[in-house]
Figure 1 (cartoon, rainbow, N blue to C red):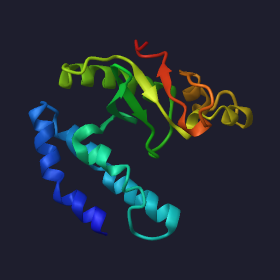
Figure 2 (cartoon, one colour):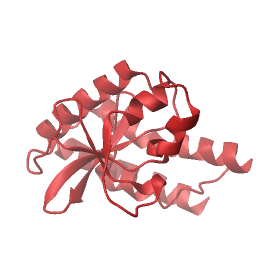
Figure 3 (cartoon, rainbow, N blue to C red):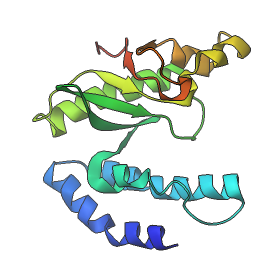
Figure 4 (cartoon, rainbow, N blue to C red):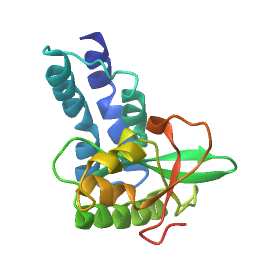
Length: 172
């Protein structure tokens, strides 16, 4: 309970940061709603109220997670450049159309609200990119089609942590 209370205590500060960047209240509210999703994941996973993903929450409550369409995004450093990191919340189908829309929104959003951190590169580190999934799922499944948007990078990296760059939404 303590992590939940601590996060709720700083929610207004996060909203103030968002306002300082010109981020609309509806995007701020939806992004902060990740706390509820994480509590739901905890209940579904452990069968109890709580927040076992509390180490993830500083991304959101540090003012650096934005829920845009079907996906969530935050800025990360990749070497000397900035990239838009992509996250896949558990909230319904991952259709190609919803992914395209989210990518378009993300590139426009970060270009507008974080012009001081220029980037159009999309990046993802997710277990959904594990190549073994494509071996057991239908080629037309949304998860396989999501995987096909990315180029895997790095040797010796475990499948759940492979850094990637998007080939869609005008990103390089």
